[in-house]
Length: 159
Image: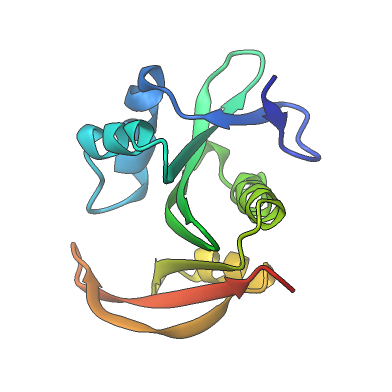
């Protein structure tokens, strides 16, 4: 049984499957100027020891509307990618995914979560700060198309 996103009766979260790749790639292209390839997503699905690619699916149509990919290695968690279909933004899905991952990894013994975000991505920065993330530093010219610095954010989980 898939885990329900708390408070979201019409959406549930489950592990990404090969059959989801077309929908995931569409969301990726609509969301980012330098999108991941299908093969990159496929690699995350296949890397079952470290990578946790999850999708949010709407009911009753079973449409993939969002995804998050994170690595969990011992006590460390790295959020690598998160996106919501533009037609489903503003519903709280990104926050629900992040809260889900924070709760699941914390319960599994993780102590520290990190991620990178474009300096100009104000909505994402506001969400991460709402969740308790703090800026650790900057990665110069981390992003391309356009070139931009990334802010490295972190959240202590074992408090």
